[in-house]
Length: 190
Image (cartoon, rainbow, N blue to C red; front, side, top):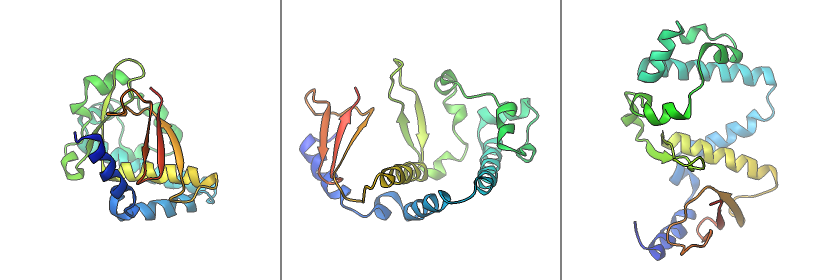
């Protein structure tokens, strides 16, 4: 990677760019949808979740070898999903060992269309587990975090401190790092 001063300069510039530039045009729409969803009735939210879950399962059935294998074995097709509770009875949970052992089978055959980034868990159990996140998933995570922060009165651009499972390279053993571009103090839980 680049030297720490170069990384800091890039972060300073990148952190000041509008979210729609760094996270895609859909980011602000995601933020708006999340805000609207807070006031929807539970039944309406569950109906929306069911539609999205069926679409995700249809994608997995058609494109993800690991899930196709399990769905076929269970005799499951996405249209059989009638309630959110059906998911628990129809599909076994994905185990950490499956993520490690079957990584390639958990990748959708069209994953390249989404240009996913390879990410890892924090490795708190000893060995990090690898997974893929596309730009939309990353933007949705940031939109959720923004919503949670805003519930506490936070406004975009205000100074903030965050503690996460970050490995902060180039900090000479310090468990923290400032990011002037994002106006953030990062604290490593490691």
